[in-house]
Length: 511
Ligand code: NOJ
Image 1: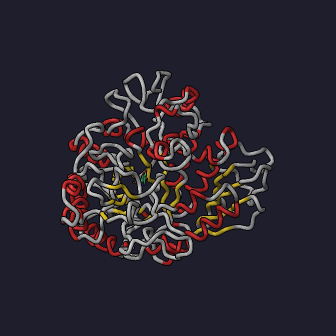
Image 2: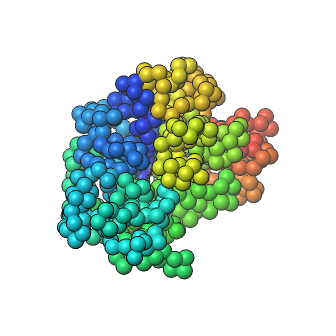
Image 3: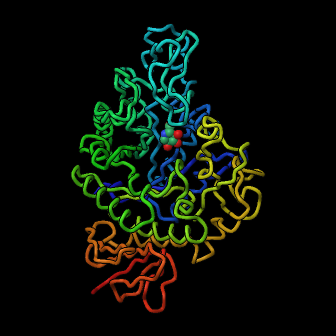
């Protein structure tokens, strides 16, 4: 039996913004549970939940204060158990987010570290260092802007590659390793099917802590070889559990070859493929991303994965140009992604064709990227606006309360799940059909990919012998290499059988 994660479609639920059961304007686990039938009907195989653990929410949950509980904003541990149970009853798997690079500054370990003197073992779980004169230990910068070091009253500095509220752990400390082994077991025992690993390429740091310099080939804190040993230890733990539990790494590295190293048979199972996400809507660029990824991952026996959007990037409708063109391209990209071998990740709302919300008022933005850059960077709130479910109330069915934590554009009244369910030409209907075909066509699960000759703006490939996907990324109609009528198309095919620009179609071919 092929493990499920080798060809699954995994739906990302950003808990803050998926569904609000109690009317406080913030999504919660009961909200997710109430909408599981929607996900089942959509046709996905698994759900990845963004962090729901107790947290001061300095980075919307990526600052974890307790790895073994649920933030009261989102519910209780009993709610998490009920969600896992109901999901399994519906045939949906649950993947939870694990944040090992850093804790919250409110985590008991960090509080103890602050209360301790320099040199105390309580500081050894984090990366405290003396400064250089009055300055920080080195020139490292935070991913969210500003320096990566914060000074504490006794004069030492601690490292945070993200916000100051997210101190980095020292993964050379045996206690840190043991703690995370135990956290893995805690959630595996509760029945989760896998873990998405946050910043998986960041755990190891060069102990000499040299300055980052353009000329050095090896970066001092990203993608160090020492990180792999951590994942070998984790793999031994999940392998001891029944069922096919999975690790998916969030790994931003220089090349797909470096990515593949994390997916060797005794490390992580899969990783997000950011080469595909970051490729422009261009036939050559997309094909290169597909070919390079498949070739590199095949070397280590890992399945390719595909993703177009997530909670950290501008939604792809907007990246692809926005408006009607962005929407057409997004539909075409979805059919491309779902026809490729391997597994695919959908980010909540992409099935509704939601665009980035670019005009949020400054006062409602929560992302530390916005605050730490003093507004120079808008941050990621624009892709985190709560989902429009139904109706015309202020929160568009997101919850029973009057509003949602980020205001939804009024235009989203036309994009609700209810409205799109009733429209066979909607993005939601396209996703539902594509996922239904993906489940029922054997070639889409196991057929080899073979590219067919095609004009410059067109991608055409077979899966197995009888499935054909054609993607026209150009602006003008393209001739397709079959006389069959499409099984599914992201746009209306022309009467002469050509495929319009920014459109993809799937065919079953006998020729
Ligand atoms: C990646 C997560 O996806 C992002 O949302 C978060 O801000 C950083 N890691 C830090 O945890």
